[in-house]
Length: 553
Image (cartoon, rainbow, N blue to C red; front, side):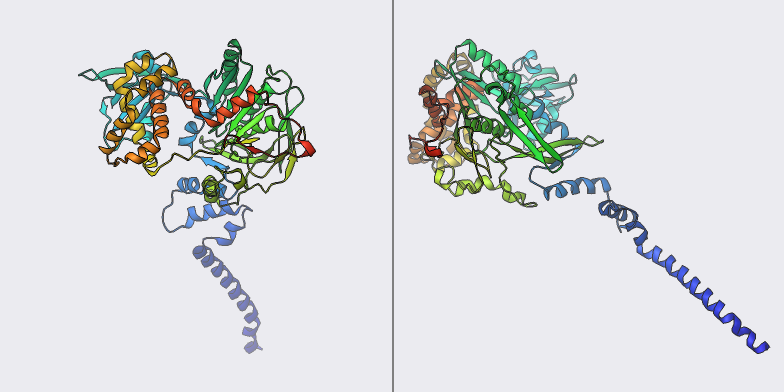
């Protein structure tokens, strides 16, 4: 019997060996796989799991903050072209246009010949109060020399901007002064005007240029309208060309000024955002004023809300070229570190039901951004027949046909005029030589220019200065070979560009737009429409409507 006793322990020994083997296997699995199963199965969020695994087990040290900061924009780029992530260090600057102000010294400047040149001193700002002048050169900042090829616009703004109440010391080189002038400036709030011009363009018609939709745009518009009202305007041109948009609520407030009570301005709707309608309340003081709105391919977002509300309600005439096509609504979400996520939560629709958003493919933002270049290359800026509108058809209140699927198509199309463009002119513009020459001319004639009392007086003076020949000499000395025939062919463009820059340098934006509008075809057509009493669209015959091209073509 004793010979059989060891056999009774064999199953027990085998079981014990199996248990020990399992424990050893689990130990080495955990050691060499990084607790793979336990980590991955702890949550349902694979992104969090991935970051934890990298942080705990990656072969090299990883700056997880930088990794996340770099990953955020990439993730959002796969959603749509307008959902964006803004790092904390860039958040304040990104809000400047929306807020309508920033804290700084109150100057506009350019960098030329490796030096900061002050172009304009903002009225009432800190720089004007201490005596800085347009034409001054900033050569030192806080006692340190700030000139040379390493000077950039970004670094200059970083040095000059700052918290309200802080001071900056500038060393200024001024023409006619042998020694540097020292100024100590206390930074303050600097307004950024979004209504850059408002004046009587004819004895009976007003003109207002709006460059963005910020928190201050609505009160600025009311001030402009009051000013024009004192001068007895009977019709209005609102110029939104080049206006990339801004705050949707501001566009709604502006549209409310010009619409009768009970008119739909815009509505928004998204997957988790129920339809929300914005209706005019009837308190607008100009609900029956003859109105024309100007747009182009750079008019986007809030500009399209305003233009779409006017067009779909048959309240006025829209003139120009097809707008950009941004119909997505972003909600800003701020993180604890100050960074901001602007996430698309809905689409906006014009009163007829159009979504103005142009087509896009997720993750193909480069193609989306190149859309304007593609429009240009296929001739859309020059011929209405080249415009591709594949979106559904909608009807305005009077039954006119309008289309969704990509921007606001104007009621009257005005092609871009390229008849006088030459390669010599394009080189002069791209090289920045026109801007450089205008600044040089302004500096040497500033006192005379500032004494001019009207745009017409300014033009008469500039035409007497033989500017085109002087510019050609200036440009040739800087490497742009003179081409007399092309200079003659593009003389109107050269004159318009150079004169415009000089007027902008010597005066203000209102003078600048007043000069440009003298021979602007789109503005000219708007004036004609208003003077003929045709700013109110009428119901189409046979229930059909077609956008027509400028009769002056």
